[in-house]
Amino acid sequence: MRLRMKPPREQRQAIRLQQARLHEAEPLLAIVRSCLPSGFEPASVTGSVESAHPDRFVMRVQVRSSGADERQFAVKVYSDDFGAEMWTLTRKLATNGDPYPHGLCLPTRYDAHERALVFPWVSGEFLSDIVDERKPELLRQAARLAAGLHRLPIVPDAPRMPRVMLDDALARCERLRLHWPAALPTIEPLLGLLRDAFDQLDPFEPALVHGDMAAGQFLWTGDRLVLLDLDMFGYTDPAYDAGHFLGQLERRFVLDSVSAAHAEEWVPCFRDTYLAAMPGVSPRNVAFYQGLTLIRKIYTMCRTRPAGPTIAPSLSRRARAALEQAASTRQGP
Image 1 (tube, rainbow, N blue to C red):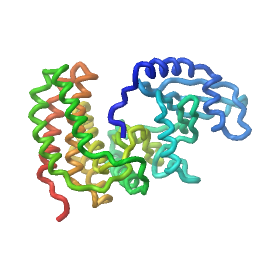
Image 2: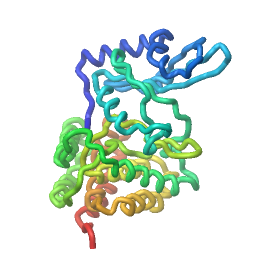
Image 3: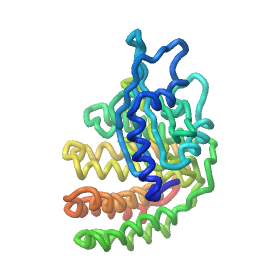
């Protein structure tokens, strides 16, 4: 599980150059050609960057034939060999016949030379952007999809212990102390609660986890939900995914008044459905990771938004409520 991805300077420079080069048709076609159907003769290839990070970027690639037929792909390029690890994992998840096995959008090819995974392009609406009457049932579907992922008998690596996640959150709080002291009055009272809740975590059976599960990772195609982006996959307490999803959902409530109006309805839709499907997962642990995620988001907001310190108190209140719930929740009868 990769909690933070910070490639060295040389890799950052190399991937920027690679991104510029892959705007050309010839190298793009070389990556996706084997994914084209038999008899498809490319007449034009275009690519546009959909997202870019220091360690990876995603391009939308459109290939048109002389007969006006078109195929689209998502090409994800990495700064290191992590794409090979992803390819190994996703080959274990792939099944014949289902384009989205276990509700996951999986790559169909790995180009080792370019360090690039090729995915089918999926069109739809992100669950995070849906705020109408469809939302409750889609949240329940997302919970069931998450539970299905956590039940898969796949061990991708050594278990990641909760202490690692706690230390990462505390390190972010320390960076807040150094760079955004205005946020300290809201963050410091939470640290004791966070440590106390950590000390009371229930034992768990590790499972394959998404690692960055949030409504923004689910795409509604009109027929089904598809879960994207396994870049943070790992092997740990499945409560981590559920708590992370809920923490990200609550973050959205702070930023979006339309979503906030539905907070009391939407949170139970996901949480209760997930816990019913996964009775062995500790509600206490889910609440702990929900609070931990909100604390981490305080750091993210301060780092990426000018108004971050002013948003921090609202996130802090939600984090406190989750951590207090973790301290009071009991596993089982």
